[in-house]
Image 1 (tube, helix red, strand yellow):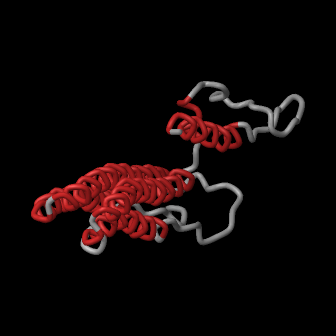
Image 2: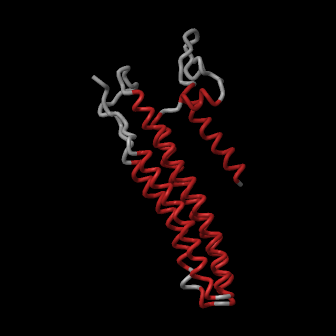
Image 3: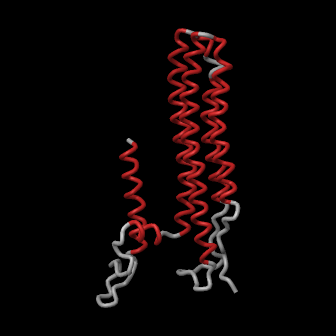
Length: 220
């Protein structure tokens, strides 16, 4: 499943990037859509360098939210299945072990928070234009796009790790609690530390995105 997902992501990125680098007119034949730039078919360098910073910013939002939800769902799947199974023999564990599910859900909440913060930073130009002018703040433009992309990845990847680790710890907690109630608090401490990984990610993500501001007007 992970292999298919990576291949699908590759195809999506390649499609959108090729749409950008192939929108050039052929001077001799005047055919729209023919790849006529110096970067044509130059591999990943041409794809990644030709993508708009707006694209990078929105990919960062998507990865930050999407990967966080994947981590939360994965963790809930792990701990929830063990909780329901163990509760058949020990019904007393059902209520207090729901805290493991809450810890998993927290990773998705971190992703939602970061996605909202990043989405509010994407600003369109004040005046409508088909192309950005030469005196546009290009360094700040690309810095904002790359910064928001890396910020989203930081949050998304750490939340995947946090969600899976909380899920595995929560699963073990439910099974151990079913056998010995005194083990619940001890394993719960492990879950708390696993959940803290997501907090580290969102803190660093916010710091990364602090200086990311899209220009809205051309420089004087």
